[in-house]
Image (cartoon, one colour):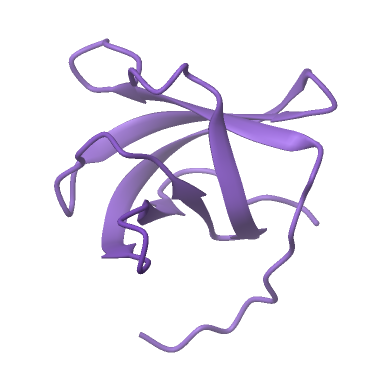
Length: 97
């Protein structure tokens, strides 16, 4: 996949994810964002997601809800300390950066 959007890091932001079953993720529900672009977010989470799983995202910046969108888990990888990272692409609303 060719990346065309610039990636941004945010230190004052977190992500919550709701699965289609209506259940929030179990990782304290404040997921660490590694980076984001107008089309998606890369985040750290040790809970398992399936590739192509559909989710509802809420992005919080400085504790305030900043963006809501439907998304699709598009990839998964791990670092050498077994931390899991997922990429999610927005399906209905792009971020305006």
